[in-house]
Amino acid sequence: MKVITGLILAIAALGFSGMASAQFAKPEDAIKYRKSTMFVMAQHYGRIGAMVNGKVPFNAKAAADNAAIAESLSRLPWAAFGEGTDMGDTKAKFEIWKEQAKFKEDADKMQSEMSKLAVAARTGNLDTIKTAFTATSKTCKSCHDAYRDK
Image (cartoon, rainbow, N blue to C red; front, side, top):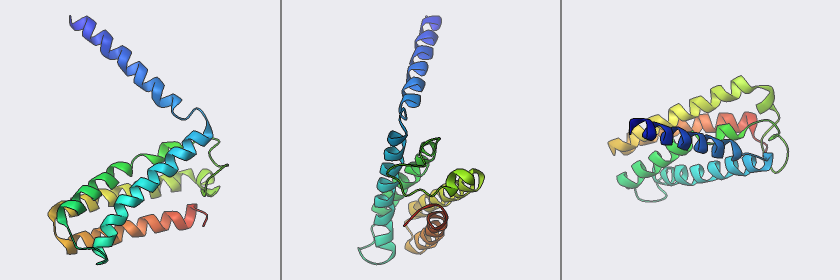
């Protein structure tokens, strides 16, 4: 029974890995994926920003929920910056592919700050959230300034 279960799990794993590699069969698929991921992440991040900036009333649960979603999404778009995705319907600058180590470092910083924001949001303290939101925004801006066309 253990052998059969192991075999089924192995086949399932192969199937899922095949689906993941097929996800970006075409460069335009990868571009669409990363743009969509960034858009949804920005929507949830922006909801926190609206609270931080006093544009909407502060809601601790909504802040924590949106920060958790943004944190999860912050890990997704980077695999979609592969070969051949530097052209087409994209605002990505060519520097991404010239400076891959620096780009990855900036992406890692943003993910780290997004994780800190999620932790801060779980405290329910608006001042703590504001501090983390500001730090996260700086990493987003830095990367956009260096690697995104206007």
